[in-house]
Length: 361
Figure (cartoon, rainbow, N blue to C red):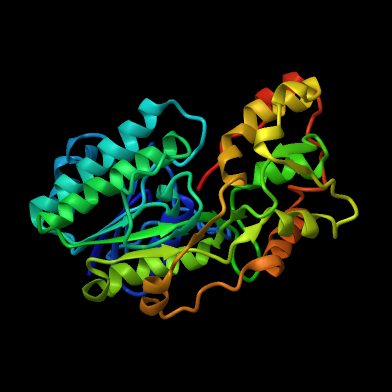
């Protein structure tokens, strides 16, 4: 079949593109700003006749910003896999609204025009700031989004749900926090939780607000890509379902204990949010908190678990093992690559300008 993949240059999008092309499907990879399709292992996927075609476009524009020729080609696709989104934290709300909400509307308009089955990649964290169990069949239950990114992804998924109610064939995949490959821990870009790890293991941030029984759900990028690809290729079974692409939750106590196993790492102290004051931190640590840690603050307080029974019953791949062994693999890769334990993070406030504080879920 022919599949349009939006966001094909992203971490998940590139892996989905590679899997579909390898399986013999014709992939139209929608790219923004002449980006490349680079796999998690660093391999670049070059255009190949009848297998992979790069298209330059913009999901925020009508017709996805495609040329007339490319739009004609896209109109005949058999599937759309919508991975494109702004996932960096700390952006202005209008940027999330423009891409994650209005951009999703443009993708839906294209899908509706030809009644093309759509696989929409959302996030498990549409659950918002709450404790307990988040189910796959839940969406808008009156939750408070933890940040503007989560709010925009919730709004985008609501649009997708409404399109499904109007008759558009839809499946939704919700990854949690996407990190390195399950077996190797390898990741092509150090986003999401990685800047936090760098700051705390260097001892530049020693105190953080959080509960030791709060849980972070880290999911391997290869598992997410496998599940999204299966949803596209086995769409008749996936249609109408929402699939949580998740790992095994790690509590902040798990993080602390594993970090303590590495002699070169500093281990942060988690302080109950009600007792934490950023103003009481030393100036440099306070600056790092304001620029980086605060972007993730709500994740350190949520005692949330994601139910994935629908995804587990659907997927041919077992859910990732995760847990402390997986965290060790992620850390080992960070050390091997030099991301951790090599060049120190500067400990002066002016150096904050060079720190990549934006994180991705």
